[in-house]
Image (cartoon, rainbow, N blue to C red):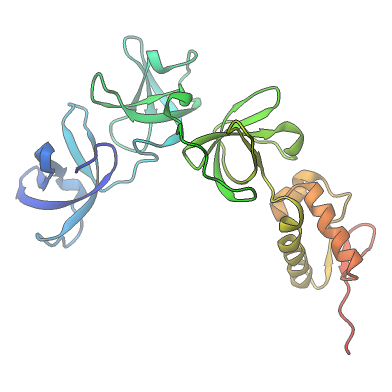
Length: 282
């Protein structure tokens, strides 16, 4: 089955002046315009193409990769507004993606970024975007485990913290008091499952919890010390944002790792900074 708004492997049917016609199965032949011809294409080959509607609402194929596909959540820039139909978003293809007025939660401005879900509108059968994210989230119980690393897309802000799309399927929450560095809506980053609540809500963290985060961080600090000839200008007084930029963890996690290394007599504090204590020879 050929899926509109996604990548497909399609066989070449024939070549014509406009380009290659591909076998779209139940959708009929689909044109791959000549400018997207792969070099030295084998007429018997199957091509990896993205299927969407062009400016004349015809199904076409492209070898280009859009920033997101049907079924995805993404942060896209508003590049145009039509007073009759809605806004248009840049998703990396010649024809911009439409965000209808009925799918907007507030007035938009050209140049701003918005987090949207991409889907096929059952009314028009066209690929469109929606700011109504809840409608497009999975309703299945979240099949994540505590401590699992996950991809996050920051989707909103509440008085508790930041909501985030987890692995393109569920909504989770980063509590404000656990976020040590500035983050913004639309930001994509890596995080961890902190807990799954009894009702299925997902608590998130930007760091692994407990001992699981301290052990690899200890090794990371030791490697950094060795690379800098045994001394680093980092200690428990270093600003949280600087620690995040260097080690990708919160200041709390960094201090825990320093404490574990000091207790194991692998580092000393040099005020400021830390120095590596080499193990004594037996």
